[in-house]
Image (cartoon, rainbow, N blue to C red; front, side):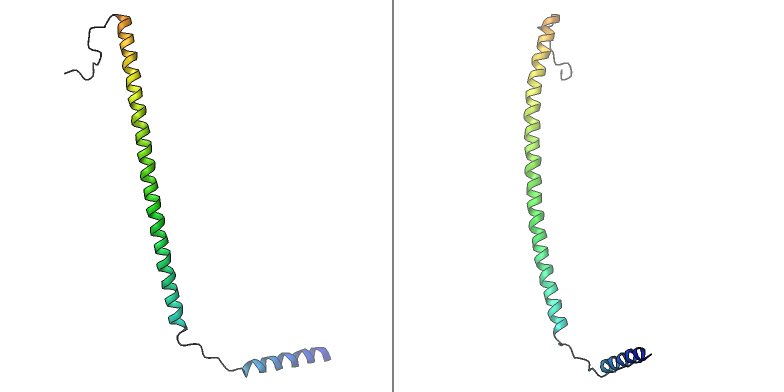
Length: 106
């Protein structure tokens, strides 16, 4: 019982001490400072995003250009080998003097 009363007294004393504490006034310019810092961070992030998107777009253009060059050179090699294959087949069947490009005839 004594310990319960001692505990109750300590709790009441602590709550009483909390009630006597005065509220501290904040800095009136704190909100303005925080707002300015957030705006500064937003501008820095926008610049970083813009730089990243520029690098990404240039990288994609170089990649697509490289793929196109590879595809075009491969296509030219394939056309040459197809032409020689068609000519060899035509000579085997005796079509040497005739036009072998049937799709593009005028």
